[in-house]
Length: 117
Length: 117
DNA sequence: CTCTATCATATCGAGAGACGATATAATCTG
DNA sequence: CAGATTATATCGTCTCTCGATATGATAGAG
Image (tube, rainbow over all chains, first blue to last red; front, side, top):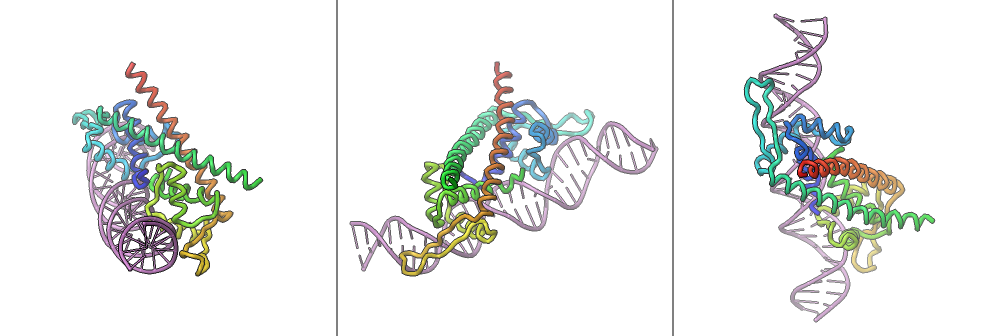
């Protein structure tokens, strides 16, 4: 496990899984994640945009600026096939992580119960 | 969710839950975590010791050097009551995190399945 | 019509912390 | 005795989050 990149991995997972549901622009992704998680997950703007730029650079998402004249300028993103593949990997990594973590935690809980008895 | 401190939180969880099972020294904790997770979690030494020092400073663990003459000098740690309390909080935080994450992921998986059908 | 709040994107500096490298030394093994 | 392993410690680098700050468009209030 690369613990260093956990935050990055989680942020990417949240954004990509949101984009997998439907195309949308950055600000909307942040609102969507926050709303769907009932406020549990949030995005700082200073975190959000650099991640989107990185994901686009890596070909995992694709962005297109709205036509001038169609209201406020925004960049709408969609997930690419590579992005979907990477999303599957992230999902699997987090499932593995939590599976392994639970096993240790459950062991401990049992241990605590035993030694407290 | 404070995503920045995820790595820190996970590392602390791994170490504290190990110490909750039995007293041991730092190097042994790293081996223990690695062994019990069948190699999934590992600790770099450059990560391990600073964390132990921090946890001790915060009163979550207590260390005592082995008597000189009892073989190789090592520092044996035990978890404090405050440490056990903090461990419970960490467990709960991670359970919350994964519960919230799964909910979003499951939603997406459903969406993907639906749109692929 | 003007003023303010919100929408929307962007970047920068500071700080935190993991990671690999490096150091030190005792002990065990061949 | 030599090399491997045990055991702790620290330092510099690198990555990344986070809060602050900037910019400007648009919508709604008065």
